[in-house]
Image (cartoon, rainbow, N blue to C red; front, side):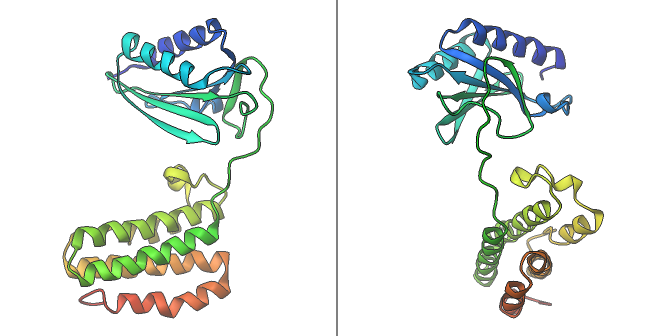
Length: 252
């Protein structure tokens, strides 16, 4: 298990290495460290701006080799956003290290969690916002599949689909309350009444009665959040999605 001291030492080493790499012309702290919200469990988040004409793939390959050879990386994955590649490393001590490699013209702040360390950091367009309309649509789509999963006796798939309804409902609630909606980051800050309703959608067992109960609760929370976004749409959906529950099993 990594310690806070381990994390701070490694971050300093990585920043020093970035300063020494002529292909990197700017760097910034991102994530919780940039906003003062860092705690015992926080990872390392750094963004690097590459010089014009730099071979991005070569830089990433070189830094990846160092992460494995010198910093005990055991695996990594890539998360591309526009032309930026976020390479996410898992270290042997369980520390996560996220390194963003931004080509010329794409480096700079897109959120408040960005603190420049060196180099210019021009403003960038904000990332696309999750659209409430799409979240509502995904909610009823998961509800359709929850209905068919229960009817077919595919209880694990049913649990997955009911949880999917809840995930989209919680994202809708986060948007409504001005909280981060991606990856559940704002969920714990939602009002107690919203979280109480969401708790009712948790599946306690794979029995038919319990799946039907949780499905019914998930449908109602979806309609509640949809009413805040588009009352007319929620009204059109209400009878249809409630009818889905009628085929969900006992006590529906």
